[in-house]
Length: 173
Image 1 (cartoon, helix red, strand yellow):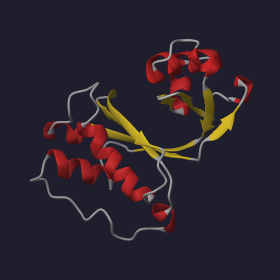
Image 2 (image 1 turned 135 degrees about the vertical axis):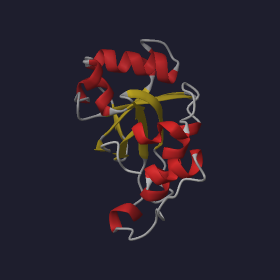
Image 3 (image 1 turned 45 degrees about the vertical axis):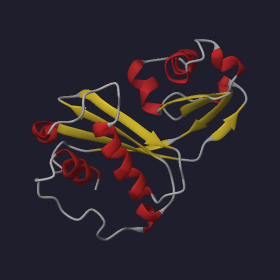
């Protein structure tokens, strides 16, 4: 569904299947999702939502299209890149408020930091891929995602969540 939604958006002439046939109970569940897109193993977009207002299949398709064309850090996905596009879909559990960094388990938890109007998150796999400690995970999220400085997490509200991660093999379209 995610791949078809991207293909339809970036190449409207490309033939795609109907993405909403045979929805399972899991796809109808209400949970957040993040979509990370890679072309030739390089990150080309990552956008998601914690919203539980829409069913999972709608969040996945909306976030997939958004990651492909709206992530301001990257150029939009081009039609000639579709055959090399790989998707990583992270299905999110509800956030849990924590009060001590020792509650964070690297590789299990993503973090969400909230300080006033500033917010930021990093998926669980980011800390593993970067080989960060808990304090590096918090510092990077605070500085680069929430915009509250390296130590901003110390006075912010902290939350953890988990992600069920699915990766495409690059041949979904």
